[in-house]
Amino acid sequence: MSSQSAQAESTAALRALLAAPKRCAIVTHYNPDGDAIGSSIGLQHILRAAGHAAHVILPNSPPAFLHWIPGYADAVPFDKDQERALSIIQECDILFCLDFNRTDRVAGLEQPLKAAPLKVLIDHHQEPEGFANISFSDPQACATSQMIVDIVRELGYAKHIGAEAATCLYAGIVTDSGSFRFGSTTPHTMRVAADLMERGVHITTVHEAINDENRPGRLKLLGFTLNERMEVLPELSTAIISLSMADLRRFEFEPGDTEGFVNYGLSMRGIRLAAFFMERPDVVKVSLRSKGKLAVDRLMKDHFDGGGHHNAAGGQSRESLDTAVARFRKLLPGFIASQPA
Ligand code: 5GP
Ligand code: MN
Image (cartoon, rainbow, N blue to C red):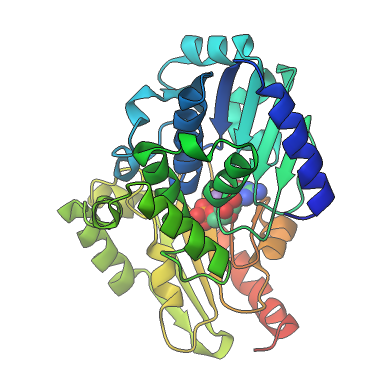
C-alpha cells in the first residue's frame, strides 16, 4: 500500500469495527467492470462467512459477460431497484466503497453515499478524493480484488475465503491485469492468484466465462470496427477507433460489446497509444490505452473530463463524435512528443 503505517492504522480500525456483527453495504463504480464486480461480490461472500450481513449495491447493471459471477444474482442494481438499494445504504453500519475514489463515480448513488456515516474505501486509482473514514488506497495494486485478499488476510479472515469468494476475486484480478500481462502484475499478484486457485477457483471455467461467451453480433461488430473504423497513424505510434450510434445500431449493440476493442489498436507493431471513441446518447465516451511512459490518465484529466491509470484511462466529451476525435488528433503530436519512446 502507499504507506505501510497508514495501512496498519486502517487495518486496525477496520478490525475493531468488525469485532461484532455488522450490517455492511458494498458499493462500486458506475458501469462496473470485472474488478468492480469481483471485488464487491467477493468481499460480500467473505463478510457473510464471517458472520456479518452484507449486500452489494451497483449504480447500474454490468454487461452480460459478468453475470456468471457467483453471487451476482444477489446484487442490487440501483437502476432496477432504487428503493431496495437506498434502504440498504441507509440502514448499513459500514459502507464499503470499492474500486473507485471519487464520489461522482457512483452516479445516482452519490448523495446517499455521502450521507453514510461510516465509509471504508478500498481502491487502486490515483489521487483519492479522501471522502472515507477509513482508507486503503494503493495505486500500485493491479486490482482492487488483490487488495481485498491482502486486507482480508490482515484481518484474520483468510479462512472465510471460500471457493465462491476466491472465484470472484480471481476474476477481478484477471480482468484488471489483462490476464496477468499488464505492468501492474507482480510476483505478489501471482502468489495471490495461486492462493485463490488453491481455494477452489477453476481457472478454465473463469477464463471461458469471461472470454468465450461472445454473441455472433459482437464479433461481427469487431470485424466491422477493425476494417472500417480504425485509423492507424504510424508517425504518431497511435491507432484511433471511433464508433457512431448508427454503427452500433447496425450490429444490435448490447452493453459490454465493445469491451476490449481498444486493445486491438495497441496490439499492432509500433503502436504505443490506442484510442477508442464511442458515441452515446448523452456523451462521447473515450477510452485510452498506452504502453510505457505515455501517461494517458493525465491526458484524460486535462482534456476529456476523465482520469484512470497511467496506461489505461477514460473520459468523455459533450462534443459531436467527429469534433471530439478531431480535438484529440490536435492534441496528439504534443502528447506523443512529450514522452519519446
Ligand atoms: P475504460 O477505458 O475501460 O472505460 O476505463 C479505463 C480506466 O479509466 C478505468 O480504470 C477507469 O477507472 C478510468 N475511467 C474510465 N472512464 C473514466 C471517467 O469518465 N472518469 C474517470 N475519472 N476515470 C475513468
Ligand atoms: Mn479496478
